Image (tube, rainbow, N blue to C red; front, side, top):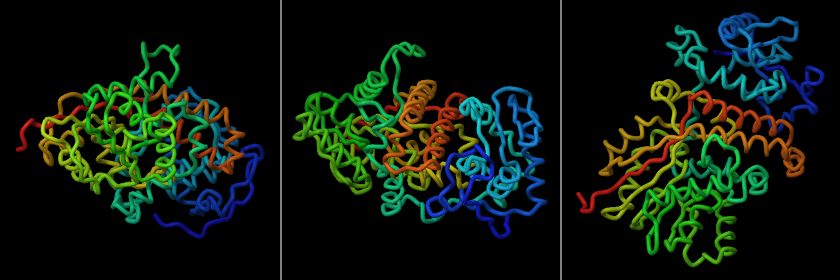
Amino acid sequence: MTTTHPRPVTTPRVPGARSAPVDPARWPDVAVPPRTSRARRATAAAVVRRALDRLPLRVRFADGDTVGLGGPLVEVHDPDAFHGRIGAQGLIGFGESYMAGEWDAPDLVGALTVLAANAAELVPAPLQRLRGLWAQRQPAARRNTPEGARSNISSHYDLSNDLFALFLDETLSYSSAVFLGFPSRQESIAAAQRRKIDRLLDLAEVGEGTRLLEIGTGWGELALRAAARGAHVTTLTLSREQRDRAVERAHEAGLADRVRVELRDYREETGTYDAVVSVEMIEAVGAEFWPVYFRTLDDRLAPGGRAALQAITMPHDRMTAARDTYTWIQKYVFPGGLIPSTDAIEETVRDHTGLRAARRDDFGAHYAETLRLWRERFTEHADEVDALGFDETFRRLWTFYLAYSEAGFRAGYLDVQQYLFTKESHAR
């Protein structure tokens, strides 16, 4: 779809929708929405209202018009801008409209859960068949080549260690926890994160003397727990901020002699290891490089070795439909990212490696709970986020990202798996 010239918006158009204007230098596509023709806005409004009429939502527009079957409330403060953004950019426009304060929801997770549960039917079938004509394509600059991956990872994980520390627990784990007695909320998230890590280390049979490769360091908690078992750990990251903090933590724990933190792409590693562990890193690999990623696991493992992975997944048909589409999450949160399906993971392993899929456990409901805790902590620390130099648009972006992700797991649109892959005792 083409658009006409944009109209600048440097102040909130709806009193009370935001407490501060959008900074056009930092957020050009939020502060300056695309100007669309009246016909396109009308078409978008018709498509949106047709979808909402059939959903268990209550969507109230500024003129008092209300649509939906009833349920979580969505208040559209600026219908013209809301429909214009969706007409021009689809779901990217939907997210940018929230960032701009053009719509709100008292129960954001509840509203987004309804949308996630009905994602396959939101766009009419004729428009879905023409996705290639209207959906934006992923930018070539975001391909996860070694150089592109460094840029993509840095744009998210190098934001600020202090920012992540505000909403993560003391382990600084940025992946799904595994809660005891779920859905009991009596356990701390730190304990649940350590349980998740220990399950992965147990799967990989990490113990005294194990040569362990970790692909995706995070802030180092898994490496530290493996080293405390007596393993010799090499852990790889592309984030300088994470590398620096992980090195610092290893020294603080007295484990620096057992933990080697390398600023290195997984494709550049050449060592041989008894075990490989990788937690929610495959989502940053990109479909183009999935075969390379899994071949790396195979190549780095000694005969008889074990690889334990934790991976977010989505249904195969939805992954296939969205595989080449540029999304709001990719634009603002995880550039170059793509969530695989279990079919895609297992087919890639089967077709490109000698590894055997020995076990798979799913626990998506635990991720919804993990995200709820992160989102609530992020909201509680809004003043500290502001003090770090992140503005209101950033806070709305991250509130939407955390709520959007939580909703995906609550609706069953997303899941999370722990995999065990094994390598034959003798090289093939």
